[in-house]
Each structure stands twice: as structure tokens, then as C-alpha cells.
Image (tube, rainbow, N blue to C red; front, side):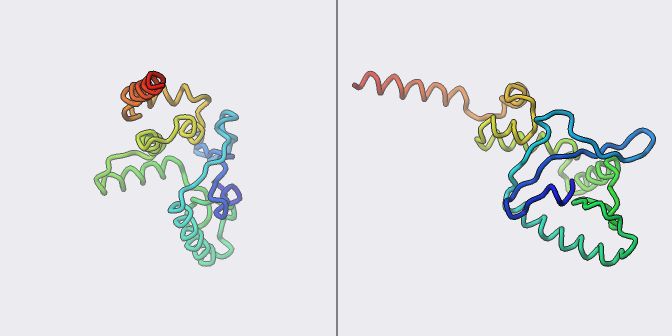
Length: 168
């Protein structure tokens, strides 16, 4: 992700590119696969605060690197400003996760985020948009078992509607 795709004042980021590591070992920026994959995501305030702090640390790295800084405008990069290898990032994250007792891989963060959103009662359409799913039906097919009390909620709503009608 590039800093130009992050608006800290508006608390959002635009998913405009992906970084792919090719078999030949080269890193290539690409446009996301689908139109829905290209999206704007609203950030929680705590993430905005963390990104502001990260930007300060990155500016310090840039000063230390001087002319050696690879100016790619990347939010996450090596200490010299060059792109991080997705494979190396994944391995490093997994090792840190194990050391902290979390047992989660980098790729699973997206699924974890979706699970927490739905368990917290966020509307499936909103969760689907954040994930960049082609449709909300994909989100519901994969994650609906995580939405708490759906059957109970449906029964309670029908009960309330019927009682309101009968009490007239």
C-alpha cells in the first residue's frame, strides 16, 4: 500500500494495488483482480493513530538512509524504503504470532477480521464490502455461522410483529 492511498484525516484507505511475488523472484505491483477488490475502507481511530506513529518512524528511517532510500511511497517497506517480500512478511508474521502464542498466519488476518465483524453484529453487506467480496452472498455462504443468534432474532421479530398485529 502506498501512502497516497491512505487518508488519515478522513480515516480511510483505498485498496488500489496488490504486490505479487513472481516465481522469478521479482516483486510486481498489480491492480486488484476485480472491481469490488478496488475499494475504500474506513479505518478505526486506533489504526489511524498507529499509522501516524508509523509514518513518523518511517520518516526517521528515511533520514537515516539518506540517498539510499528507495522512494516508493510505501506504507510497509524495508528500512531502506524498498518493498517487502510478501513471502518474507508472511514468514516473519507467523514466527511472531507463534512466539506470542497467537497461532495465526498473516493470510488468516482477513478471515479473522471478517469473523470478528460479523460476531460483533456488523451488517453482512458492510463486512462484504470491507472484504472486497464480489457479493454479500459469498460473505454469508462462508461466514453466516458466525453471526450470533440469527434464528432467535428472526423468531423474536416475527413474534413482536404478530403480537403487535393481534393487540390492535
